[in-house]
Image: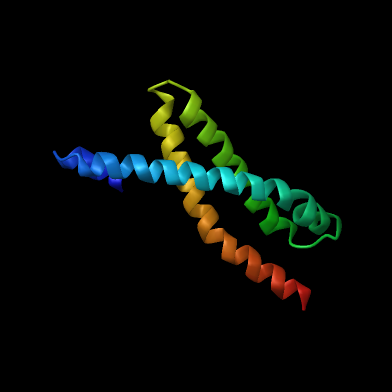
Length: 113
């Protein structure tokens, strides 16, 4: 949102806000990658072998993989043709992951009972 505001505003506030938020977002992404590295052997592989919550877990893994690939593309690819596509796919995957996460937890807990 701050990125869109900087195009409408002439002040430097939104430019600086967007830069800070992007740094926080990148730091959170690095922490998430560390957590995903631990989550795969401790949670995902065990649940997969136990045949638990495979469908929603597969969606979780897919959304995370799309986020990782598009983040890599946004950071390292300089193509002005691909960048808007990567950005929108990254935003969509992030929103879908945030919406799907509680569904995955609820379905997982229901199947335990």
